[in-house]
Amino acid sequence: MPDDEGRKYPDPRADDIYAGDRRISRPDVSLPDWEVPDTAYRPIPIVWFTGAFMVQLVSICVFLFALSSQEPWLTIIMSALTTGAIAKWTWDRGMETAGTGWKVATVIMFLFNMLFAVAASNIF
Image (cartoon, rainbow, N blue to C red; front, top):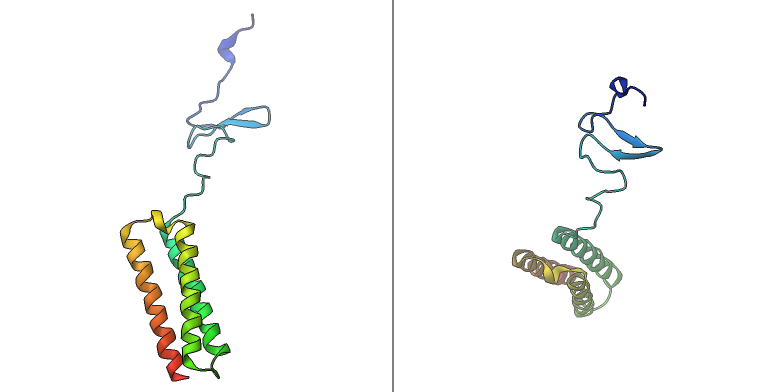
């Protein structure tokens, strides 16, 4: 049996350890390269809130400009229907499992944007 005293084994805390072309240990986490624990999608309420805000704001602005020559009530009704659809979409995406603060903030945001639609449709 050959003398093993001259063989240097890599330290997993300091060196990458490879088995062929696969890295089996990394010094920063000591996990194999195929084990990536942070890649799972974790939805967060701010994403749902921001998405709903942006979609509602754009759709209300489109209605304000497209229906500016029509009666104001038509713009308000179309904005309200769109807001209801966006609210359902937001709750189905996961807002129903979010904290109470996020739910309240989302409803307030919907109402504030609808107030903007009502005020702006009466101005035009």
